[in-house]
Image 1 (cartoon, rainbow, N blue to C red):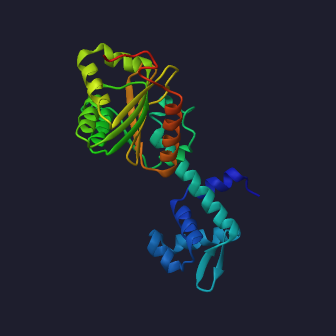
Image 2: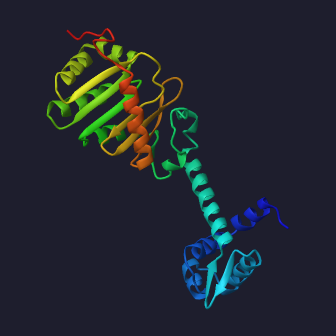
Image 3: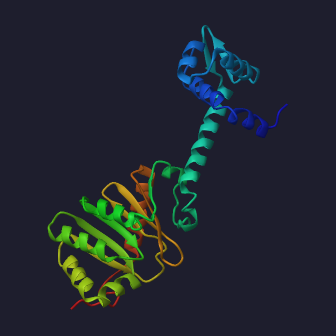
Length: 265
C-alpha cells in the first residue's frame, strides 16, 4: 500500500487528476462532461478514472461518475492544502514583518487580500493605497504606533467637513511627534475640535498598525527599523471581526490625551 505522501504526490503531479476529482466531489459527471471541463483526452480520462476507482475515490452511477465519501474527503483536503499554499505564496515576502502574535484569525482569511508593496517606481505605494481608502471613507477606527502627516491631514479635513468619523488609539511616541511639530499640532487641534473625532493614548507597546476603514481592514506592515514594507487590506468578515475587537480592546485600555499628560492649549 502506498504511503500518504505517495498518494499526495500521485494526485499533485497531475493537474488533470486534481481537477477531475474536484469536479466529481462537487457533482456527478459523464466522461464527455469531464473532457469538456478539463480539456483532457479520453485516453487520459480513462487512466484517471481507472486510478480513482482502484482507490475507491469514485464510483459509477449510470452514465456518470461520482466521488465516494472518501473521494470527497481527499478532494476537500487537497483543496484546503492548495488554498493554504497559495496564501503562503502571497504572504511569503511580508511574513517576516507581520505582527503574527496579534493576528488571532486564520491567515487563510488573507487569501484574497490586496497586498501592496513598495517598488522602484512607486516607493510609497502602501501609503498611497491607505490614503486612497481614507479619502472615501465615512468611518475610520484605528490602533497604531504612528500617525503620519498625510493621514492626519486627510482625516482632519474630512472630519472637519462632517464627512467622516474617526476614533484612534496611538502610542505615546506617535502623539509626541505630532505635538512637537507646530503644523501637525495645529492639525491635531483642529481634528480634536470636532465632534466627529476622538483620540486616546496607549502607554504600553503598540505592535501593530491596523485600521477599520468602513468595511475594509487595512494593515501597515513595517520592519524592526520602522521601514514600511507592505500594506494588506481585506473585507473578509472574520478579519473585520478581529479588527473591530482588537481596536475596541485597545480603546478600552487607553487614556485620553489629558489623562496621559498631554495638553494642546
